[in-house]
Amino acid sequence: QVQLVESGGGLVQAGGSLRLSCAASSYTFSIGGMGWYRQAPGKQRELVASIFSGGITNYADSVKGRFTISRDNAKNTVYLQMNRLNPEDTAVYYCNSLTNAGAPRYGWGQGTQVTVSS
Image (tube, rainbow, N blue to C red; front, side):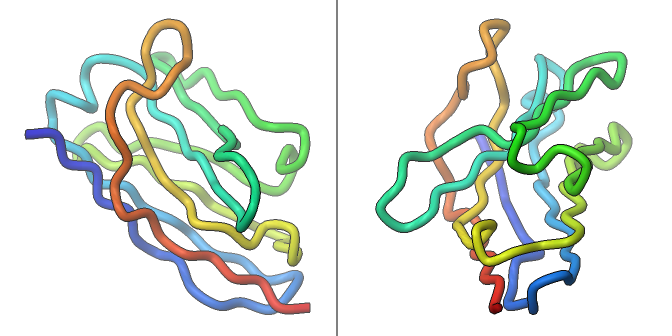
């Protein structure tokens, strides 16, 4: 059974930081890249950061320079360090395994809510 458990969200003031964690099964972690998505109210879910084998990372323009994705292979965990948060970052954040085409591989978990106050 696929398990993707997101944690670390919360309420933070603009300019603050949060670190999100996503724990995955060892199989899920081994088969490809991992990505962090977010979905704001009334908007489509979007990919904000991804990481592939060899440490190759990609970021959405809206978070580039502020967010950093990383992975700990020993812990089967992927992280999203979010700095200089602004109210536009308010969303539910999800992680997922990525196919070779960069699409989400599995269904969605509960996600973790990030709320940035102005």
